[in-house]
Amino acid sequence: MHRPRQDPGPRASLTADLPHDVSSAVLQCTVAYTGIDGLRRVRVMTLAISTSSSISGIFRTSDPEAIATFLVKKAAFGIPAQSIHRNMNMVEEEVVAILCAYRKYCQKNKSAEQLILPESLKFLPLFCLGIQKLRAFSTDTLQHVVPTDERIYHLQLLMCMSGRHVNQRLYPHLLPVHNLEQQVRLSLRDIHGHSPARR
Image (cartoon, rainbow, N blue to C red; front, side):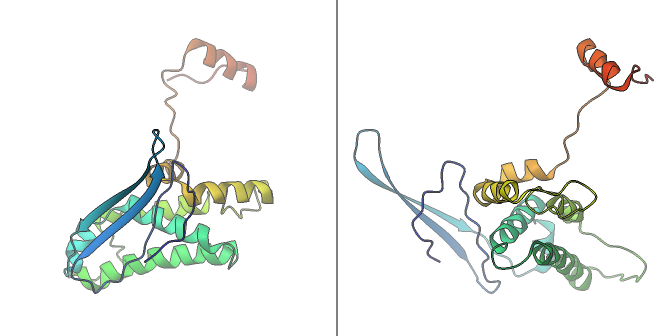
Protein backbone atom coordinates (compact mmCIF):
# COMPACT_ATOMS: atom_id res chain seq x y z
CA MET A 1 0.00 0.00 0.00
CA HIS A 2 1.44 3.37 -0.98
CA ARG A 3 0.19 6.62 0.52
CA PRO A 4 0.67 9.92 -1.36
CA ARG A 5 3.15 12.48 -0.06
CA GLN A 6 1.62 14.83 2.45
CA ASP A 7 2.54 16.95 5.43
CA PRO A 8 0.57 15.26 8.22
CA GLY A 9 1.95 17.30 11.09
CA PRO A 10 3.32 16.05 14.40
CA ARG A 11 0.22 14.09 15.51
CA ALA A 12 -0.22 11.99 12.39
CA SER A 13 -1.27 8.36 12.39
CA LEU A 14 -1.73 5.77 9.68
CA THR A 15 -4.69 3.39 9.57
CA ALA A 16 -4.71 0.33 7.30
CA ASP A 17 -7.17 -2.50 6.79
CA LEU A 18 -5.12 -5.64 6.07
CA PRO A 19 -6.49 -8.81 4.43
CA HIS A 20 -7.21 -11.74 6.73
CA ASP A 21 -5.42 -14.46 4.75
CA VAL A 22 -1.82 -13.37 5.30
CA SER A 23 0.51 -15.73 7.14
CA SER A 24 2.83 -12.92 8.23
CA ALA A 25 2.57 -9.16 8.14
CA VAL A 26 5.40 -6.67 7.85
CA LEU A 27 4.74 -2.93 7.79
CA GLN A 28 7.34 -0.53 6.50
CA CYS A 29 7.22 3.24 6.63
CA THR A 30 9.69 5.62 5.02
CA VAL A 31 9.99 9.24 6.12
CA ALA A 32 12.10 11.79 4.25
CA TYR A 33 12.99 14.92 6.21
CA THR A 34 15.57 17.66 6.56
CA GLY A 35 17.61 17.65 9.77
CA ILE A 36 18.60 20.71 11.80
CA ASP A 37 21.98 20.72 10.05
CA GLY A 38 20.26 21.05 6.64
CA LEU A 39 21.00 17.52 5.44
CA ARG A 40 18.23 15.50 3.80
CA ARG A 41 17.64 12.23 5.64
CA VAL A 42 15.52 9.15 5.10
CA ARG A 43 14.29 7.12 8.04
CA VAL A 44 12.93 3.62 7.40
CA MET A 45 10.91 1.91 10.13
CA THR A 46 9.94 -1.75 9.82
CA LEU A 47 7.50 -3.56 12.08
CA ALA A 48 6.81 -7.31 11.92
CA ILE A 49 3.39 -8.23 13.27
CA SER A 50 2.49 -11.72 14.38
CA THR A 51 -0.64 -13.22 12.87
CA SER A 52 -2.95 -15.97 14.05
CA SER A 53 -5.28 -18.40 12.33
CA SER A 54 -7.17 -19.05 15.58
CA ILE A 55 -10.19 -16.77 15.77
CA SER A 56 -10.51 -17.27 19.54
CA GLY A 57 -6.91 -16.08 19.92
CA ILE A 58 -7.69 -13.00 17.86
CA PHE A 59 -10.65 -12.11 20.08
CA ARG A 60 -8.66 -12.85 23.25
CA THR A 61 -5.84 -10.47 22.31
CA SER A 62 -7.82 -7.81 20.45
CA ASP A 63 -7.43 -4.17 21.44
CA PRO A 64 -10.77 -2.32 21.72
CA GLU A 65 -9.08 1.12 21.66
CA ALA A 66 -7.36 0.28 18.38
CA ILE A 67 -10.64 -0.96 16.89
CA ALA A 68 -12.45 2.20 18.04
CA THR A 69 -9.70 4.39 16.57
CA PHE A 70 -9.92 2.50 13.27
CA LEU A 71 -13.71 2.94 13.18
CA VAL A 72 -13.43 6.68 13.95
CA LYS A 73 -10.91 7.23 11.17
CA LYS A 74 -12.88 5.10 8.70
CA ALA A 75 -16.01 7.14 9.45
CA ALA A 76 -14.13 10.45 9.25
CA PHE A 77 -12.61 9.62 5.87
CA GLY A 78 -15.98 8.37 4.62
CA ILE A 79 -17.84 11.63 5.30
CA PRO A 80 -17.18 13.28 1.90
CA ALA A 81 -18.54 10.24 0.05
CA GLN A 82 -21.60 9.47 2.21
CA SER A 83 -23.81 11.08 4.81
CA ILE A 84 -23.08 11.12 8.53
CA HIS A 85 -26.06 8.84 9.19
CA ARG A 86 -24.73 6.25 6.76
CA ASN A 87 -21.26 6.41 8.32
CA MET A 88 -22.69 5.97 11.82
CA ASN A 89 -24.72 3.00 10.56
CA MET A 90 -21.47 1.58 9.17
CA VAL A 91 -19.84 1.91 12.61
CA GLU A 92 -22.78 0.14 14.27
CA GLU A 93 -22.76 -2.62 11.65
CA GLU A 94 -19.02 -3.18 12.09
CA VAL A 95 -19.40 -3.51 15.87
CA VAL A 96 -22.37 -5.85 15.48
CA ALA A 97 -20.45 -7.94 12.92
CA ILE A 98 -17.48 -8.28 15.32
CA LEU A 99 -19.69 -9.35 18.22
CA CYS A 100 -21.74 -11.72 16.03
CA ALA A 101 -18.55 -13.35 14.76
CA TYR A 102 -17.47 -13.93 18.37
CA ARG A 103 -20.84 -15.48 19.21
CA LYS A 104 -20.82 -17.65 16.08
CA TYR A 105 -17.24 -18.96 16.17
CA CYS A 106 -16.12 -18.79 19.81
CA GLN A 107 -19.11 -19.61 22.01
CA LYS A 108 -20.00 -23.20 22.76
CA ASN A 109 -23.26 -22.50 24.65
CA LYS A 110 -25.33 -20.30 22.37
CA SER A 111 -28.40 -19.19 24.28
CA ALA A 112 -30.74 -16.97 22.26
CA GLU A 113 -31.64 -14.83 25.30
CA GLN A 114 -28.10 -14.23 26.51
CA LEU A 115 -25.86 -11.41 25.32
CA ILE A 116 -22.34 -12.77 25.08
CA LEU A 117 -19.42 -10.36 24.78
CA PRO A 118 -15.73 -11.23 24.64
CA GLU A 119 -13.83 -10.08 27.71
CA SER A 120 -11.42 -7.95 25.68
CA LEU A 121 -14.22 -6.26 23.70
CA LYS A 122 -16.88 -5.74 26.34
CA PHE A 123 -16.48 -1.95 26.07
CA LEU A 124 -16.74 -1.87 22.26
CA PRO A 125 -20.49 -0.99 22.27
CA LEU A 126 -19.69 1.87 24.67
CA PHE A 127 -17.00 3.10 22.27
CA CYS A 128 -19.56 2.92 19.45
CA LEU A 129 -21.86 5.20 21.45
CA GLY A 130 -18.91 7.53 22.17
CA ILE A 131 -18.14 7.73 18.44
CA GLN A 132 -21.72 8.77 17.70
CA LYS A 133 -21.52 11.54 20.31
CA LEU A 134 -18.34 13.11 18.92
CA ARG A 135 -18.83 16.67 17.63
CA ALA A 136 -17.77 15.55 14.15
CA PHE A 137 -20.55 12.93 13.93
CA SER A 138 -23.24 14.27 16.26
CA THR A 139 -26.68 14.34 14.65
CA ASP A 140 -28.77 14.61 17.82
CA THR A 141 -31.49 17.18 17.18
CA LEU A 142 -32.34 17.53 20.88
CA GLN A 143 -29.02 19.26 21.46
CA HIS A 144 -27.93 22.30 19.51
CA VAL A 145 -26.98 21.68 15.90
CA VAL A 146 -23.24 21.53 15.23
CA PRO A 147 -22.30 24.27 12.72
CA THR A 148 -20.72 23.01 9.51
CA ASP A 149 -17.40 24.80 10.02
CA GLU A 150 -17.08 23.37 13.55
CA ARG A 151 -17.94 19.86 12.28
CA ILE A 152 -15.28 20.12 9.55
CA TYR A 153 -12.74 21.33 12.11
CA HIS A 154 -13.42 18.29 14.34
CA LEU A 155 -13.33 15.93 11.33
CA GLN A 156 -9.95 17.32 10.34
CA LEU A 157 -8.67 16.84 13.89
CA LEU A 158 -9.88 13.23 13.99
CA MET A 159 -8.23 12.44 10.67
CA CYS A 160 -4.75 13.28 11.94
CA MET A 161 -5.04 12.43 15.65
CA SER A 162 -3.06 9.62 17.21
CA GLY A 163 -4.91 6.67 18.71
CA ARG A 164 -4.29 7.94 22.23
CA HIS A 165 -5.87 11.32 21.47
CA VAL A 166 -8.88 9.75 19.73
CA ASN A 167 -9.53 7.53 22.74
CA GLN A 168 -9.27 10.50 25.10
CA ARG A 169 -12.20 11.99 23.18
CA LEU A 170 -14.20 8.76 23.38
CA TYR A 171 -13.84 8.23 27.12
CA PRO A 172 -16.21 10.28 29.26
CA HIS A 173 -14.49 12.88 31.39
CA LEU A 174 -14.94 12.04 35.06
CA LEU A 175 -14.29 14.68 37.67
CA PRO A 176 -14.17 13.89 41.39
CA VAL A 177 -16.73 16.02 43.21
CA HIS A 178 -15.96 14.79 46.72
CA ASN A 179 -12.71 16.75 47.03
CA LEU A 180 -13.54 20.05 45.35
CA GLU A 181 -11.73 23.06 46.71
CA GLN A 182 -13.60 25.71 48.67
CA GLN A 183 -13.56 28.20 45.75
CA VAL A 184 -15.23 25.73 43.43
CA ARG A 185 -17.88 25.01 46.08
CA LEU A 186 -18.55 28.71 46.35
CA SER A 187 -18.90 29.04 42.60
CA LEU A 188 -21.37 26.13 42.57
CA ARG A 189 -23.38 27.92 45.27
CA ASP A 190 -23.42 31.06 43.12
CA ILE A 191 -24.58 29.13 40.07
CA HIS A 192 -27.36 27.11 41.70
CA GLY A 193 -28.37 29.50 44.46
CA HIS A 194 -27.62 26.95 47.19
CA SER A 195 -24.69 24.87 48.33
CA PRO A 196 -24.22 21.42 46.80
CA ALA A 197 -25.62 18.52 48.81
CA ARG A 198 -23.09 16.80 51.05
CA ARG A 199 -23.06 13.22 52.16
